[in-house]
Structure formats: structure tokens, C-alpha cells
Amino acid sequence: MAKINKDPITQLQVESETEFREALTALEQKGTLQQLPQLITFYLQLPIGFKRTAMHAFLASIIKKGIREAWMELLKNTIKEEEKHPIINILWNTRIDFSPYLVEFVRWAVEGDYQTTLECLTVMEQMAGPFGEELLLEAQCLLQERRNSHTESPQKRALLEDIESVLKNFESDDELPLD
Image 1 (tube, helix red, strand yellow):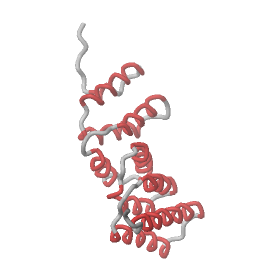
Image 2 (cartoon, rainbow, N blue to C red):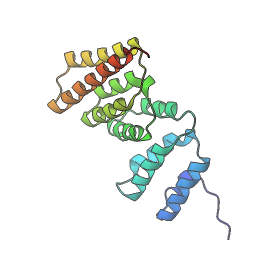
Image 3 (tube, one colour):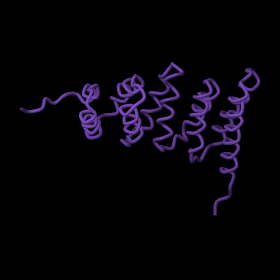
Image 4 (tube, rainbow, N blue to C red):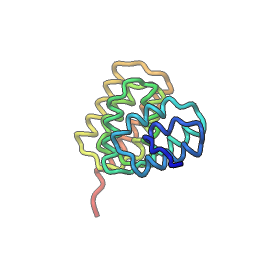
């Protein structure tokens, strides 16, 4: 009997690990960036285990043209803090350079909880730049405003200081003379 060609996202909801892997393979081959919000929604609902780990690896491996912009659009539309940090963790695992979005990551870091701040820091540490003076200044101002207006836990304050160091390193890297 011929197998019914189902929507791969619907197929992800099977119990069998084999069928789950087949659905991921189908998504790998025929999936589109427009499916990313549905995939994230599905991922965020999974309990810790094989499927969640496999989905994380799959999402982090997407390399289609426009994926960086699709990730950023998704993240900008994510309101719940508890959903932001798993998504940012996936971004860190993609190894995509999110340098053009430095200010957004600093904003999420200062506004977010400890976990979101940590995830943002890991993404920023991978950024390659170059960063324009205006971008760095805006990011530094966001940190300064937060420091002046909020009292943070010692743990989050330490992460924000690490972000400040990362920004200073970006600044000094951009000042290096060209050979």
C-alpha cells in the first residue's frame, strides 16, 4: 500500500522515532522558511528527550538563503521571555553571524531574564563584525541606560559586564589598522 504523502509538520507529531526522523528528512528536503514559526511552536512544546534534541539539531542546521532574517523576524515577534531564550540558544548553535543585529541582542539581554541575557551573550561572542561606530554606540547606550535605571541581581550584572567587555573588544577590533 502506498504511503500517504502528509504534511511534514503534521508527521512530526508521530510517536515513532523512525517516522519522526523521516518527517525531519522531508522538512530538510522540502521545507520552507515560512514553516519556521510552526516548527518553533512545535519545538517549544516538546518535553526534554529525543524529539526535542533532534528538533534542536534540525533547527540549528537550517542553512537556506534568508534564514538569518527569518530567525530575527521570528525572535522580534516572540513576546514570552520563556520562549526567547530557547530560540536564542538555537541561534547560537547555528553558527550564523548575527553581527548586523548586535543592538537587538543587547536590547534583549538588558530587558530579559538571566537565561536570555546569557543566551544573547553567547550569540554576541560569535559575532564577527565589522561594527560601525553608530551601532556600537547604540549598544553601549542601551547597557548604560539599563545600569542607570535598574538594579540587577549580581549574576545578571556580571553577564551585562561581560557584554560590555565584548562590545569594547568589538570597538578595539574595528580600530585595528589594515595591513
